[in-house]
Image (cartoon, rainbow, N blue to C red; front, side, top):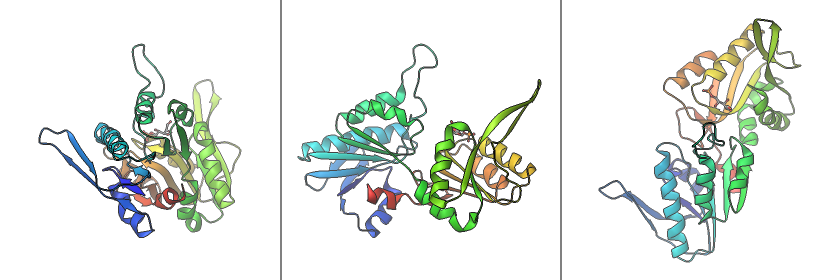
Length: 279
Ligand code: R5P
């Protein structure tokens, strides 16, 4: 039984279509801006689905209120599916006095939820901060399915070493080669970025990553691939946290940009709903 928060409304139609049972919930705001939540069903177990894209803080508070309402209603086991987890990039203290923000949010959710499912978490190690069972869900299968025919016998690339595992997972689904970009010093004054140990000439390339923000990473990677004579360039990313103008910038630089619908955007063409139903 699913409970859909305001960060999951864009997934609700497909969840219902594919057979997901939904417990109705009333969600609105008090005149002063505070959230009002009322669960309109009962049961033992529930999976609350809500992604925490902007305005992030409201959606986080709402997840806490829904958790409290469900416990109050007598639900015994609660799972939270938070496809995009806000604050996930603030996973360390860089200046004295800062919080580990991702830890704060995970601990707070742990008050109510027994299990937490996040898609392609920026740093999967941070799941250790969630007191219950924390799962990092891979979108590799749905991204691979979307690009299978377009990519043909192409290759899968990660824009940096940190995303290498993501490229491996998608490439494995497709049975294709994969690699990542690396910075290479070519002279004392010059650093070159290029794919490691793989020839892209004439090959279609799919670049995968967890997040697009400004789009700078993808634009740079695609410029390099064009210079190296790659065929078609596709970008398949999990979370489209697009800054102003980023969709246009990346779309202009590549043959196709597609992200998953962990966040609803004009290019969220790849659905994670089938994966939610498999959890
Ligand atoms: C970095 O660690 C992330 O995985 C992404 O590569 C990064 O957030 C993308 O940012 P932008 O789109 O601004 O280049």
